[in-house]
Amino acid sequence: MYYPDEKNAEPVYESVTTEQNASLQWLVRELSETLKVEMREVYRHPEVGRKNATEASTARWE
Image 1 (cartoon, rainbow, N blue to C red):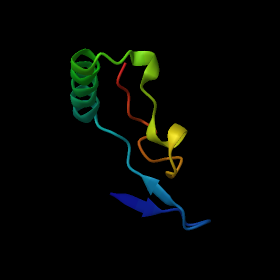
Image 2: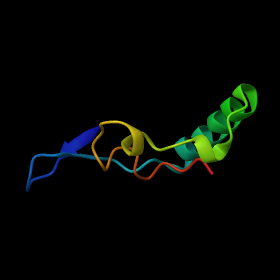
Image 3: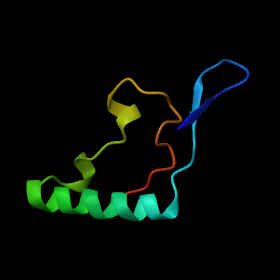
Image 4: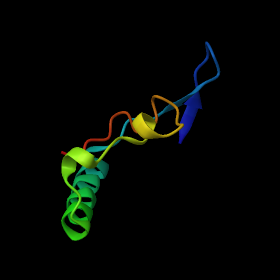
């Protein structure tokens, strides 16, 4: 869920919860091991695709 920024109407996303980060860490670790992808090859979506800069900005998987 997101809320529009009052100044520019850009979406501002809620912070990720501790529980969501724990689940994300588990999922990324499992995928990395199963698919043999090194963690240095895992990127935040806004870094490699068109996304709002605040989307998933508080997600931590390492």
